[in-house]
Image (cartoon, rainbow, N blue to C red; front, side, top):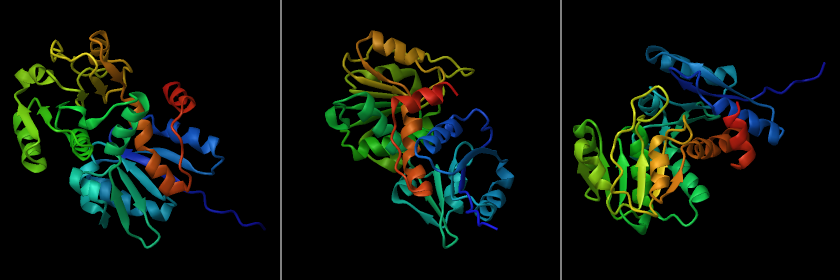
Length: 279
C-alpha cells in the first residue's frame, strides 16, 4: 500500500468572504507551478475566530490570509509578529510554523508598492507629497510603505477625523490631517493619490471627493477593484494622471504568503490577472 503525502492547505478567513478573488488567484498558481495544494474561503464569525484558527494546523493548513473583520484579532492571537505587522497594527498573512507557533505578517504595503512599480514605471514615493483618502487598516499599510519609500509629506483625510488624527499621532509629523470636507484641497501638488476607502465600490456609496486640484502626471491608485476602473480613476485619467487599479495590489500581496506556504515564489503576470478577472 503506497504512502500518500499530506496535501498542504491554505485559505482566506473573513466574514463575509464568498466574494474573495483569492481562491482563483491561488488556483492559477497551483496549476502554473504544478503544486499539489488547495486554497479555500473560510467564513468565520468573530466569536469563533481564535478557536478555528488554532485548529487549522491540525487539519493540514500551512497558513492563511486574514481579511475583514479579523486582521486586528489575528495580530493579538499570533505568537510571533513581523516588524511591519506590528507597525501597521494588523495582520493579513499567517504562517503556521512547524514548532506550533503562529507567525503574523502584513503584506498589504508590499502589495501596494509592487503594484505601483509594475503598473506605473518611474513612480517614486519620494517625488513629492502623497494624499491618502481613508484611515482604516489598508490606509495604515499604505502610510507605512509611503513613509518607508521616502514620501516627504502624507496628507490624510477620513470621514471621521479622529481616526485620521490618531494615525498622525502614531506615524508622526510627516502626516498632515485634512477635514473630510476639505479632502479635495489636499490633492493640490500631490504626486501620489490613493483611495483606501470603499467609496466607489460596487454596492457602496459613490465617490464624491472633488478632483479639480489633481496635478497632471500624478500617480493615482484606487484600492477598489470592483469595478476595475472606478469613477475616481476615470476622472484622474481624464485629468492626465497615471492610474493604477486595485487588482494588482491583491495579486502582489499574495506573493510572500504563497512562497512561504508552498516553497515557490510566484510571478504576477497578465495571465494571472486575466484568470482572476474571469473567475
